[in-house]
Image (cartoon, rainbow, N blue to C red; front, side, top):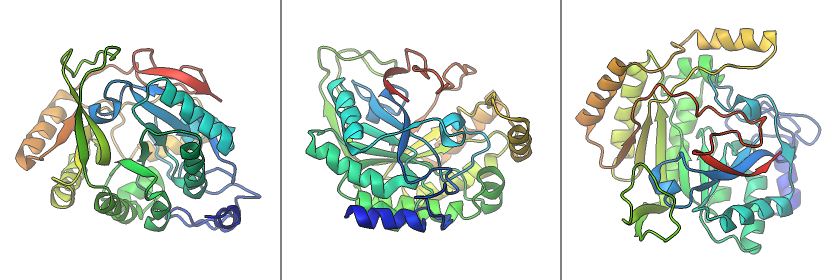
Amino acid sequence: MELSQIDELYKNCRQCPRACGVDRTNATGFCREPADLRIAFAGLHFGEEPLVTVFGGSGTIFFTGCTLRCAFCQNYQISQDGLGRAVDAEEFADICLRLQNAGAENINLVTGSHHIPKIAQFLRTARDRGVTIPFCWNSSAYETVEMLELLKGLVTIWLPDLKTLDGALSQKLFAAPNYPEAATAAIKWMIENNPLDIQSIPEPPDAKPAEWAEPGQPRDKMLSGVIIRHLFMPGHFAETADVLAWLKEHADGRAIISLMNQYTPVKFNESADQLMARRAALSNLENRLVTPEEDADIQDLIEAYDFEYLFYQELTDDTSWLPDFTRPQPFSNKLATPLWHC
């Protein structure tokens, strides 16, 4: 795609299913971002699924802005409050090369749905500059198939969320009543265009130890395919049951399922008006940690569906993993190694 064509996609922006129509060359869209592509943090991350982190960690790049307004977002500082700095294609490629040279297994592009045309251009520059590891698309799945086509042949690993199939709930929590239709269409496209390719990789001498892996043993690594994530929201067991039923029908055996129980209340540092709006949205769920009873019910549900390949987290009340992107190291040293900060 030529630069002039990319610019046109920002002048009457309909990149995401929201189709807000804003001229992002002169203003910001619903995503709160202009045409400039901004990022907040890049580093090795060891908290993703084992197929993605493997030995060297996932080379994460966190983009500023988001197409959703999730009331409970743990990354709100960058997704909603604008923390980040603009980069061009060359600086983006430099960051990718730094991650690759540091041992990253892939370049993990986090929440870039509002910048797909420009990201596709930047990925081509990174490839031309010598980036050889896979690109991984980590998103809410609130994106259009038309835009995803621009990433075809560039991205081979996909980490979409499937948050809910309830449009009324997605309106209250994400400000997107059409989220279920858009996300399921996007995920179907990802599955159809990216068959699973998982290889067993021998442990290198400098492998980072992992709690989930036996020392000295090979580890599975995803080179292509889809890992569909769903976060259980406290008090909303029915939503999770509906999502798992959809995944059983449309994704089992063709994609990996990752069911997460890590919902954690966030201590938001925002203005009084922002906090009032956020509390109103959060009143639509039980803003607390998952209980052992809920965890047991979820495990019963998983057992009943008998997915071919599913990850499920061990329940914990540890909240120290919550990031603070105002710091050069937003995460714990155990969870991430920072390489770039805005």
